Image: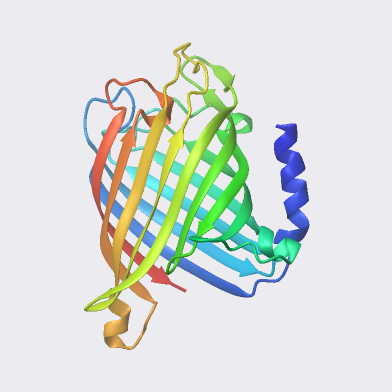
Length: 274
């Protein structure tokens, strides 16, 4: 974790710069076939989202909060309805061409970067209902390749640390350090109206034993969406997007294949840009 604080400290002076551009939206996603480890049934979830992205002289900042509201198939601790899960992601990407002042574009590559960030999570189910001082948290850092495409296409190789709390066994867990391969994209196109194909894919390496003493496995997650700028139909371009998304999650949270560890979810997506 000391390495994480070192990188974060290095990036902090850059990320404090005034933004040259920003984009923020509030959104909603809905699907009925989400899964959770050890739960045998499909779970319906409504996901409320706030996302903020900005760019400045030396790079970009990305902040996203998802509030996932489950139905009763994924119960809150103590009953009373479905669980609420809050997941926060922050990423900062430092542009190497901007920092060095050198033209680093080569072939299909637009630029190289250095990415660092943190994930935080809080869920009020039986697994995560324990001490708030031991919320799940993940730190990532590593190099990024930014490809020269319309929009963006970024590939990162990340060093990952993770801490968690297992309230079922009353144990805080510090996982082994692992690797992550991350692909992030947002490609604009036109199909009757302006549209975009967006998403991310994460491949995360095994991270040792979990709180139950089970050896974790390689994890893969895909989240993607095809979004249409319906706001442009009434003169409000880039304001309201509606589309269809898809999530695939294999070995969710690194849990070995079993009940609830694989999800395949078609989602309805909505974004209103502020």
